[in-house]
Image 1 (cartoon, rainbow, N blue to C red):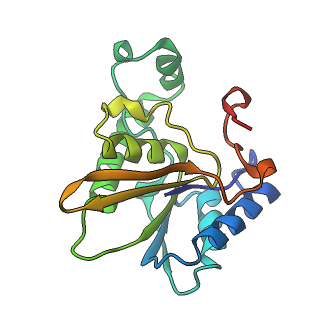
Image 2: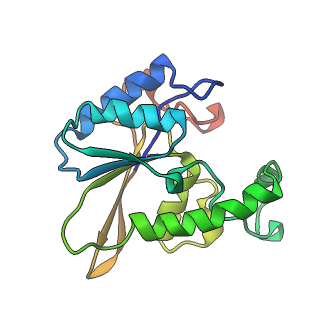
Length: 191
């Protein structure tokens, strides 16, 4: 899984975001991907298109399940105030619409397969946090606080004979220092 590249207020990739996506494609050019799925939002679609240039024989598809939404909305009493205040910025409709999509995304994009498959998912911070929290069997609200940098790479491994594995989380080693940590509040950056 990869978070989309840095985007401007218009939702389009910035120059930094395009470069991040190019470098992610170079990082992944040896992986035998069977597909690249991406959110329909412009920033993720453009990231997937740029990455796919390095993977020319891999099918690319857009999926609403990979969109930018709240994957789980716990009771506010279950959360520290900073997280409950954050969730208060979303409408009741947004909080209700996201969880069914998140469950369907897990059903579609996770779990063991009959044969080895490698699928790249280009999506958003919330959904990657959701997939990681569920792979680790964490409480459903734990997606909050699992943050990814733009074009950070997270690898989850699903096998028939064991629980899911988190192979790498938010790996930005393919990005030069000036392109790392975009998408993070400055107080959380580890430059």
